[in-house]
Image (cartoon, rainbow, N blue to C red; front, side, top):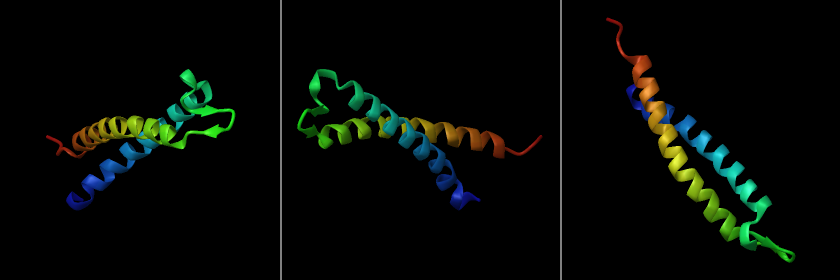
Length: 79
């Protein structure tokens, strides 16, 4: 269990980060503030990727930390 603890904690954190990053990138692309995501000729995929990464990293980090806390609390020995 100890060897897999980090992986078990990282999976939900990364999944939540991915869902939030994809959702927020779509919302930003759809609303297109200041025309930075797309114009009539196409999409600026670099800006979309930057937005996705800027959402993924902090959300995945916090979600993984919370997952570690919850799993640690659940795995504590009963007294």
